[in-house]
Length: 62
Image (cartoon, rainbow, N blue to C red):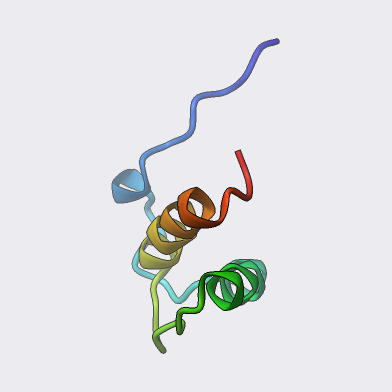
C-alpha cells in the first residue's frame, strides 16, 4: 500500500485558521465519548491535536 505521509500540523500553512466544520463535528463526537468539553475557538492545528489525543483515549480512529 502506498500512503502519503501525513504532514505535521505545525507545518500546515493554514493551521492557524479556525477548525473546519468536519473537524468540529468529529471532535464533539470524540469529546462526548471521552466525557470532555471542546474549547471554543480552536485552530485547525489545535483541533487536530485534540482529535489525535481523544482517538487514543477512546480507541477510535487509526
